[in-house]
Length: 104
Image (cartoon, rainbow, N blue to C red):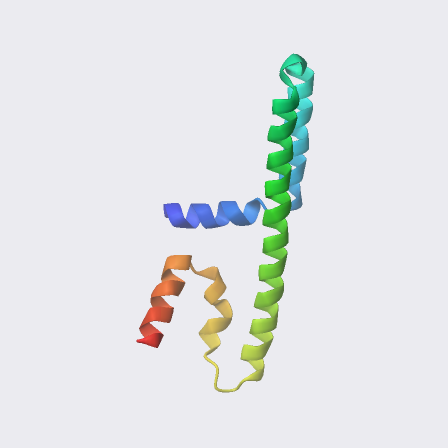
């Protein structure tokens, strides 16, 4: 497994609901074990982390919806290449190489 592959899977994992459970668990443990250090800075840290997860989840939802729509269009068009329906499973660099090869 390459570093790029690990990063792609990590990005997808952070869009899952359990990522929010990890955030809540981390905050709870922080409050239990280091309550005195959970000040405005700690709150800002947790808020930043939560907003990052919200943004990641929204982007993941939008991407999945867009992919579903494109998959349907590819299935409806008889001239479309079948392998394009699974191109979203490839690494971004591989997709970029394919697009450049087809353009030029």
